Amino acid sequence: MTRKTLLERLDGLVVWTGIPALSQRPPRRRPLRWPATLALMLAFGGATIAAVQGFTGKGYWIGYAALMAGFAIGNFTNIFGPLKSPASLVERVDEWDRSALAQAYLVTFGVFAVTVFVGLFAMLWAIAFAPTSLSAKSILILLILLMTILTTTPTAYASWRWRWDEND
Image (cartoon, rainbow, N blue to C red):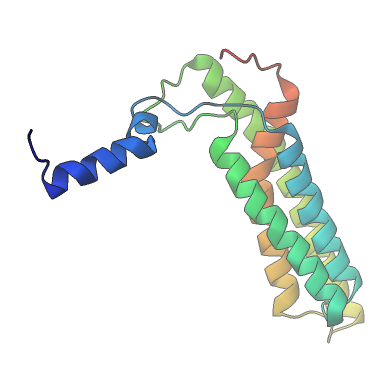
Protein backbone atom coordinates (compact mmCIF):
# COMPACT_ATOMS: atom_id res chain seq x y z
CA MET A 1 0.00 0.00 0.00
CA THR A 2 1.54 3.27 -1.12
CA ARG A 3 0.85 6.43 0.73
CA LYS A 4 0.16 9.59 -1.21
CA THR A 5 2.02 12.73 -0.36
CA LEU A 6 0.19 15.93 0.47
CA LEU A 7 0.84 17.38 -2.99
CA GLU A 8 -0.53 14.26 -4.69
CA ARG A 9 -3.67 14.45 -2.58
CA LEU A 10 -4.10 18.12 -3.41
CA ASP A 11 -3.63 17.33 -7.11
CA GLY A 12 -6.29 14.64 -6.80
CA LEU A 13 -8.70 17.14 -5.24
CA VAL A 14 -8.10 19.60 -8.08
CA VAL A 15 -8.72 16.91 -10.71
CA TRP A 16 -11.88 15.90 -8.81
CA THR A 17 -13.32 19.43 -9.27
CA GLY A 18 -13.21 19.03 -13.05
CA ILE A 19 -11.56 22.40 -13.68
CA PRO A 20 -8.43 20.99 -15.35
CA ALA A 21 -10.65 19.09 -17.81
CA LEU A 22 -12.42 22.35 -18.69
CA SER A 23 -9.14 24.06 -19.47
CA GLN A 24 -8.12 21.30 -21.88
CA ARG A 25 -10.86 22.04 -24.41
CA PRO A 26 -12.14 25.29 -25.91
CA PRO A 27 -15.09 26.94 -24.16
CA ARG A 28 -18.53 26.06 -25.43
CA ARG A 29 -20.03 28.95 -27.37
CA ARG A 30 -23.78 29.40 -27.31
CA PRO A 31 -26.25 32.11 -28.26
CA LEU A 32 -27.40 34.16 -25.30
CA ARG A 33 -30.43 35.90 -26.76
CA TRP A 34 -32.45 36.61 -23.67
CA PRO A 35 -29.67 37.42 -21.18
CA ALA A 36 -28.11 39.90 -23.62
CA THR A 37 -31.49 41.46 -24.41
CA LEU A 38 -32.32 41.66 -20.70
CA ALA A 39 -28.97 43.33 -19.99
CA LEU A 40 -29.58 45.98 -22.65
CA MET A 41 -33.14 46.59 -21.48
CA LEU A 42 -31.98 46.98 -17.87
CA ALA A 43 -29.18 49.34 -18.89
CA PHE A 44 -31.31 51.59 -21.09
CA GLY A 45 -34.23 51.48 -18.66
CA GLY A 46 -32.01 52.26 -15.68
CA ALA A 47 -30.35 55.17 -17.46
CA THR A 48 -33.75 56.53 -18.48
CA ILE A 49 -35.16 56.21 -14.96
CA ALA A 50 -32.11 57.95 -13.48
CA ALA A 51 -32.35 60.78 -16.02
CA VAL A 52 -36.10 61.26 -15.58
CA GLN A 53 -35.68 61.44 -11.81
CA GLY A 54 -33.17 64.25 -12.23
CA PHE A 55 -30.21 62.23 -10.89
CA THR A 56 -31.42 62.68 -7.30
CA GLY A 57 -33.52 60.77 -4.81
CA LYS A 58 -34.71 57.17 -4.68
CA GLY A 59 -35.54 57.02 -8.37
CA TYR A 60 -31.94 57.71 -9.28
CA TRP A 61 -30.71 54.83 -7.14
CA ILE A 62 -33.29 52.45 -8.60
CA GLY A 63 -32.18 53.43 -12.10
CA TYR A 64 -28.52 53.15 -11.13
CA ALA A 65 -29.10 49.66 -9.67
CA ALA A 66 -30.87 48.53 -12.85
CA LEU A 67 -28.05 49.97 -14.98
CA MET A 68 -25.38 48.18 -12.94
CA ALA A 69 -27.33 44.90 -13.09
CA GLY A 70 -27.48 45.25 -16.88
CA PHE A 71 -23.77 46.04 -16.97
CA ALA A 72 -22.90 42.94 -14.91
CA ILE A 73 -25.13 40.62 -16.95
CA GLY A 74 -23.79 42.13 -20.17
CA ASN A 75 -20.19 41.42 -19.26
CA PHE A 76 -20.97 37.77 -18.62
CA THR A 77 -22.85 37.47 -21.92
CA ASN A 78 -19.81 38.89 -23.67
CA ILE A 79 -17.57 36.26 -22.07
CA PHE A 80 -19.82 33.25 -22.67
CA GLY A 81 -21.58 34.43 -25.85
CA PRO A 82 -21.31 33.10 -29.39
CA LEU A 83 -18.56 35.41 -30.65
CA LYS A 84 -14.97 34.27 -30.40
CA SER A 85 -12.23 36.69 -29.48
CA PRO A 86 -10.02 37.52 -32.48
CA ALA A 87 -6.92 37.18 -30.28
CA SER A 88 -7.94 33.79 -28.89
CA LEU A 89 -5.11 31.35 -28.35
CA VAL A 90 -7.41 28.49 -27.37
CA GLU A 91 -10.10 28.70 -30.04
CA ARG A 92 -9.57 28.60 -33.77
CA VAL A 93 -10.95 31.78 -35.34
CA ASP A 94 -11.83 31.38 -39.01
CA GLU A 95 -13.19 33.73 -41.69
CA TRP A 96 -16.80 33.26 -40.62
CA ASP A 97 -15.97 34.21 -37.03
CA ARG A 98 -14.15 37.34 -38.21
CA SER A 99 -17.05 38.28 -40.47
CA ALA A 100 -19.62 37.72 -37.72
CA LEU A 101 -17.55 39.79 -35.30
CA ALA A 102 -17.19 42.61 -37.84
CA GLN A 103 -20.94 42.69 -38.55
CA ALA A 104 -21.80 42.63 -34.86
CA TYR A 105 -19.44 45.51 -34.10
CA LEU A 106 -20.74 47.59 -37.03
CA VAL A 107 -24.23 47.37 -35.54
CA THR A 108 -22.80 48.07 -32.09
CA PHE A 109 -21.03 51.21 -33.22
CA GLY A 110 -24.24 52.47 -34.80
CA VAL A 111 -26.10 52.04 -31.51
CA PHE A 112 -23.13 53.56 -29.68
CA ALA A 113 -23.08 56.62 -31.96
CA VAL A 114 -26.80 57.27 -31.57
CA THR A 115 -26.53 56.92 -27.79
CA VAL A 116 -23.57 59.31 -27.65
CA PHE A 117 -25.47 61.85 -29.76
CA VAL A 118 -28.61 61.64 -27.59
CA GLY A 119 -26.57 61.73 -24.36
CA LEU A 120 -24.53 64.75 -25.40
CA PHE A 121 -27.66 66.54 -26.62
CA ALA A 122 -29.33 65.85 -23.26
CA MET A 123 -26.29 67.18 -21.40
CA LEU A 124 -26.19 70.34 -23.53
CA TRP A 125 -29.91 70.81 -22.94
CA ALA A 126 -29.33 70.42 -19.20
CA ILE A 127 -26.55 73.03 -19.28
CA ALA A 128 -28.71 75.50 -21.22
CA PHE A 129 -31.99 75.16 -19.34
CA ALA A 130 -31.18 73.65 -15.95
CA PRO A 131 -27.50 74.17 -15.10
CA THR A 132 -27.80 72.61 -11.65
CA SER A 133 -29.15 69.30 -12.97
CA LEU A 134 -25.95 68.32 -14.83
CA SER A 135 -23.58 66.60 -12.48
CA ALA A 136 -20.93 63.93 -12.34
CA LYS A 137 -23.75 61.43 -11.77
CA SER A 138 -25.19 62.08 -15.22
CA ILE A 139 -21.79 61.65 -16.86
CA LEU A 140 -21.24 58.42 -14.89
CA ILE A 141 -24.62 57.06 -15.99
CA LEU A 142 -23.82 57.81 -19.64
CA LEU A 143 -20.36 56.22 -19.43
CA ILE A 144 -21.66 53.02 -17.81
CA LEU A 145 -24.44 52.84 -20.40
CA LEU A 146 -21.89 53.21 -23.21
CA MET A 147 -19.67 50.48 -21.71
CA THR A 148 -22.70 48.20 -21.47
CA ILE A 149 -23.53 48.86 -25.11
CA LEU A 150 -19.97 48.02 -26.18
CA THR A 151 -19.87 44.74 -24.27
CA THR A 152 -23.43 43.49 -24.76
CA THR A 153 -24.69 44.60 -28.17
CA PRO A 154 -22.33 42.39 -30.23
CA THR A 155 -23.49 39.32 -28.31
CA ALA A 156 -27.16 40.28 -28.61
CA TYR A 157 -26.84 40.96 -32.35
CA ALA A 158 -24.92 37.76 -33.07
CA SER A 159 -27.28 35.70 -30.94
CA TRP A 160 -30.40 36.98 -32.71
CA ARG A 161 -28.93 37.33 -36.22
CA TRP A 162 -27.71 33.79 -36.94
CA ARG A 163 -29.13 30.36 -36.31
CA TRP A 164 -26.81 28.50 -33.96
CA ASP A 165 -26.64 24.72 -34.02
CA GLU A 166 -26.12 22.84 -30.79
CA ASN A 167 -23.12 20.97 -32.25
CA ASP A 168 -21.21 24.08 -33.36
